[in-house]
Image 1 (cartoon, rainbow over the protein chains, first blue to last red):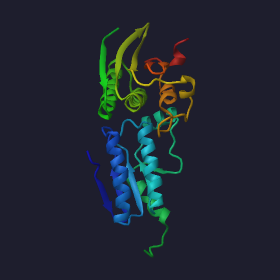
Image 2: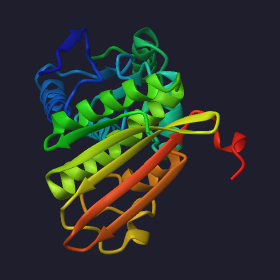
Image 3: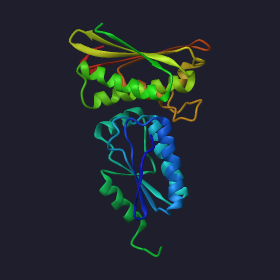
Image 4: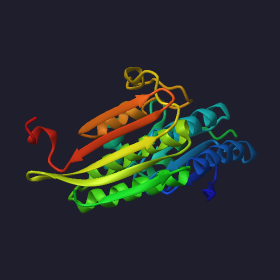
Length: 122
Length: 140
């Protein structure tokens, strides 16, 4: 199942579901890396609101998405971590160091526009 | 014993099935909220270990009762290469694959009881339990 990637101005938005296999996640990582280049995107928001389990593989993939994106000139924000998922991540010892997080999509987009600053010299 | 449930683990899809089944069973014995997520996450980790290291195996769920507390027991078995050094594998960050190395130690932190039996070349059995009453409430 391919994860749809939405384009919103300079940003890309993808939503992660719980029922994604490892292969789906890996494909999302590849698709995002490619589209960031093709569409010259400056930021990526990954919405995990619908994910009720985030295990170590999911987190590792999210970290990879953020790192690859940064190398391609786009910042990544993870939004929508459920409280119980965040709690499980802490117990598991998983961290999202170096990746911005926001409460929801709106906040994610706000974080991206702030991180770019007010310049729009394109 | 209130019922057994056996799942074959052969592919990534079975990881999803296992954690969904585990979550349903945990809800059945009275787990709620974040405990359900903890159980499902632990199952996801050990199911992935089976797929990654052994290729195939099985996960058996059973529901247990101990006094006033009910619990879920998850046994993951495979006949894969086994773990040469269980103590080492239980350390955070140790991985022979390109993972975060949090599978076993992480799953242990999510559950109340955790045991790994493994023999090189013979396979691995992980047994983990979680009780509806927290550990602190159960004097051990």
